[in-house]
Length: 355
Image (tube, rainbow, N blue to C red; front, side):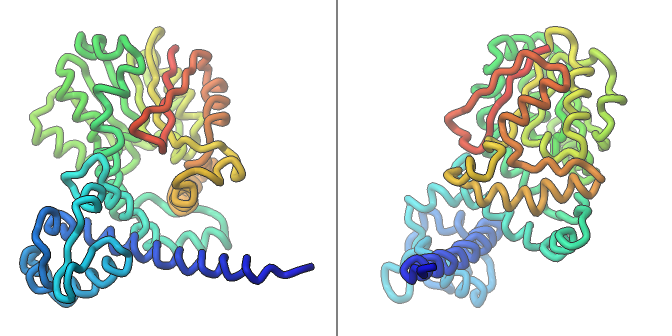
């Protein structure tokens, strides 16, 4: 066989670039969490000591962080001593830039690195990694959903069913499964005070955060429970809810079909199930051109599959795809399924499902 040295060199360059990009993600995450991007936003160019002083941080660490940011071409140096975050970069790295703050998503890289040894052990022995090993997962997810779900929820997601906003105004029973820190539930409870909302999630930490937010907001129409949803098809009250929602939650479940069957059982006749989930093809070749395919498969491998298998589940994974999602919905009993894409969110599909 002939050996293409040009191809080999191009691949070597590609891998080296991956190292730099991965390191950039870690440093972007640090900059986000330390508030450095927000401090640099709309500031004049500053020296290392000035920036450290503005942010109330240790100058020695700020120096190394700025070095990484300069090499990554994120922060610029207008002269040999000063550093500046261009406005065009700040528009994608600062909290005021939400919902376009890409720094939020960089946090997943560091989080996943904390469980690398545990996931490697799963490669050898099988099994999974329990939720409680991912210490900051729900914190990051709350920020994530704060950009992808919350800003679009009332004006773009709910109106996929044109009757939903009016029904919520009048007062209906709503259940959110895999609610995480409850940000969607609390937002809707505040917006639609005549409706009653329940959020369920496996994580006690997430549920406690949801309850605190509801209490701080004085919400009386939202309640939260920590519950394993594996046997929802057997435990949910029949015909109890007018609207059930899941936001990027089904693929993480131990038994996704049990969850969907539970949703079918829990919905009243004429009720609506709204499912947001990852827009994958369900096939590796079909996902080659996905703009963040590598990122999503990595999260799937190191979190979604791992937490499902830790519960002796199916390990469906984030990239299960539209075809399999529609098939499982059909197996659960649903026949009226319409899939939507929204302009603001290339990562997810939105399934409008009626009973």
